[in-house]
Length: 309
Image (cartoon, rainbow, N blue to C red):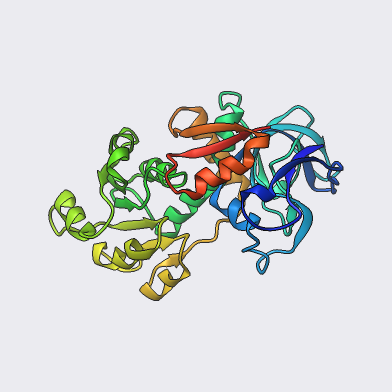
């Protein structure tokens, strides 16, 4: 199969397209012929070798966790999937080797969901990891009907989905931090934009009115914004971060996203119905994976980047 792989860790240039043996297909594994693969910040952490203490790594290593494509083969215990079925998945395995930047992706059953025909592969590839991260972060805060929710980095890959999912969970108002150039985009998602940086608490208070507080903070940035969260909250412990475990010292929740096929199907269904917009800023051919990762590392991407396999 053709895949992007690395045999050493470092800058984007360690990635290259190679011919590799087809991956093994275990009993409860679905082999997916990839059409598109999402690019996520964790991918460049893998490329730099920064997660080797968390998961066993094996080379040649194919990065990537998001896939959209069709079933090529289903293992004997992989019931519910048949060759030709359109699927999408957050393919996080117990080790790191067979990622999604490839023509063939071995996806454990726990990582995969059927893809509605109305949801094209390019948009679907941008959904799994970012969508699950957004949903599980909001669930960790107990977001519910009537809440006022503040989403950090509301124009980013996770944030732009979190804004919309908060509405789906019943939030009455959603605010989102974003740079000035992305304020109109954030408004188009149904959120009230607020600028980053010093004075955030005061700007949020001016928008909210009343006591100047929000019910929920969903942190996808960390740093100064996370440190400001307790001063923004109406109640303590209704904030969560996917960036910084120190949120627990503030009484909040730290979220490490989990594969969940039922949640993934829920997200895909809403995207297929047009209730969840997946913003894809740019697509790249597989051989331009280094350029895609370099662009994402610059931290100025609106929505998602996707590789076309």
